[in-house]
Length: 476
Image (cartoon, rainbow, N blue to C red; front, top):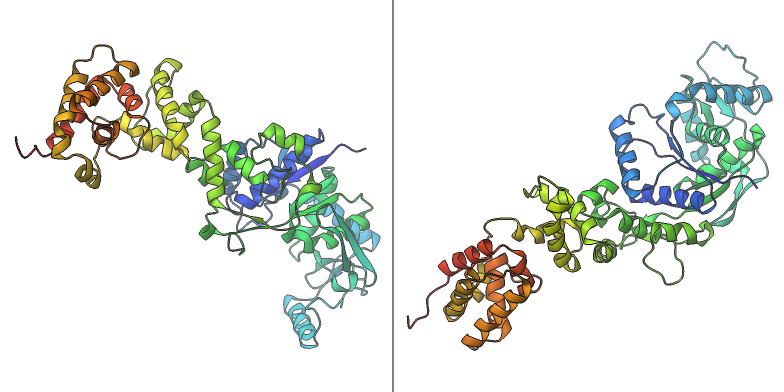
């Protein structure tokens, strides 16, 4: 049995988006599961739209996802001589011919076919004219497609798909300027690179019978095809930015973990029992192309965010602390020396916050109150909780914390509880005002943990600042 070889072949005309990333992942998983080879090929023959910036962005996205390729990136723009050799082979064998019809003439043929109720197509004017290699007019090279019979694609996902050959016109394989076209390049590349399985979006299915015929004309083995259904939004319309779909690197910059993104992409149209959360190693072990569903995958941003939260909760605090550093820096909280020693306090902060965060951006936002000298107190929270009635207890808490020698969570809790007892208050009556004073917000982890993670000076200073905006009791 031949070694499995798959490929991901993006065009560098845009960023790597969700659909392309899932295609890359499925090719990667199929190759890894079978101990095969995953090839990266860049289809950059569109000179006007292809850019080096987009190429680097695609590579950046694949690298972030951890989809390492074994060969490449091969660039079609550097393989023209190879394509020319195969075009000559088709001409010599009579499976291709030169066509001197102008663009205007071809357009007229298509309009005439439409007017007659037929599919708009080239009518084969030059098919049997035996035009030599140096005609007086510019010429394209067309593939001589069969006029009868059918071409069958035994798709690994869709099953048997039958195309009537009479519906397939003689496609151009080389333009009049000599440049080869997409369908020819793809076949030649897959032949030269020994690709055994072509896993791609089902928007390419219409090209497949044409490519199968070219394989046959070249006398080359036909790879297994698997056309993956497209991804739709929750309204079942084609996926777009309005559904929350962004480039892969935009999700990275929004604070998503690569493992969560890979897990979510794998589950868009593929399942393995009732399991929802998979490591990459588990995906390699479990994934089969045949288990990809025939129905479109539905992209749900809320489900992705939920899954990301699960990965944040299960990650080590040390790993999360390092992953959060760029987001802290972006918010103006740079950690100058991210050594294990200097990170130890940040790791404790992250461990406290990670059960409540859905993204690394949220994690950085929640951590900010531990990293700034002053917090901005929400006016509504201040009005509700920083009241004259609570001022004596809050002032007492600040005084006692200022004199606390042993700054540990246990001693902070004991101090807090002694204030509650002396002022005959339930925990919530003082915890919420203290939370507002210390974090500026009404939601945070446990108040004892929050206080203990702040320095004594910072905690006391914030309580005193909050007291300045807290009205005195009326009887004072």
